[in-house]
Length: 113
Image (cartoon, rainbow, N blue to C red; front, side):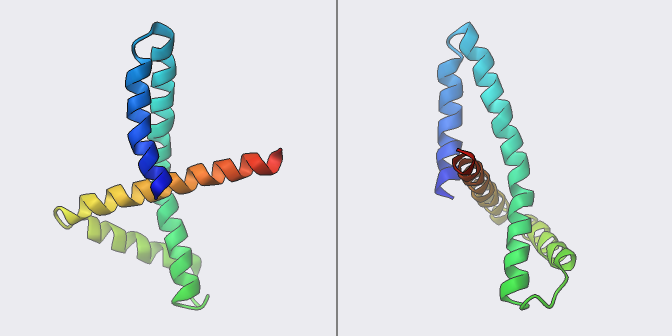
């Protein structure tokens, strides 16, 4: 989650710094769009990873992975309906997921070299 937090702090700062030049503006917009896509993919990733964790640790692989994903998704949705708590859970899930995606990308680039 610390990498996701670092991204959440650094991406807006880099975007603001890059907007001072015309070439940097395009790069800043591209970085911001990539970051928005990363955030959009992060919550489903967290739900998938957490459903696999629940399936293997709590149910000892006796539960179908699709049913486990459905249960986790419904629980996540119900928790996000709670005022004030829901937005905190969404932010934490987005930070966790974006950190995992960046770590996965870093690990894949190291393996290919």
